[in-house]
View 1 (tube, rainbow, N blue to C red):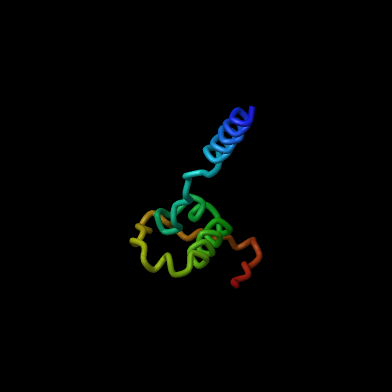
View 2: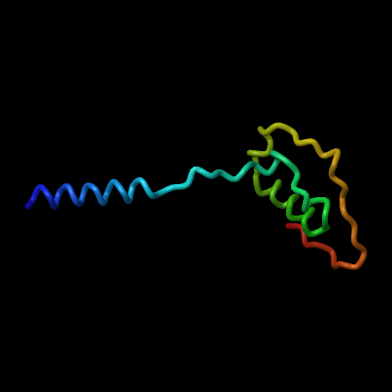
Length: 83
């Protein structure tokens, strides 16, 4: 009886350990420029904030090709706060 209990506890523990975690990693901010950076001013500002938030990690990554990026303009929206 005791052996069955120990085996049951070990089986449950193995299942719980196997279910934890996720191997997905968010790509670094400089791996590519998202389409939203050219689509709107808010998307462009969000991408720039992401670059700044990546801190020193952005300094050691490869440069990204920005030839396809066009800085969007919109004269009707309020200015963005830069922190």
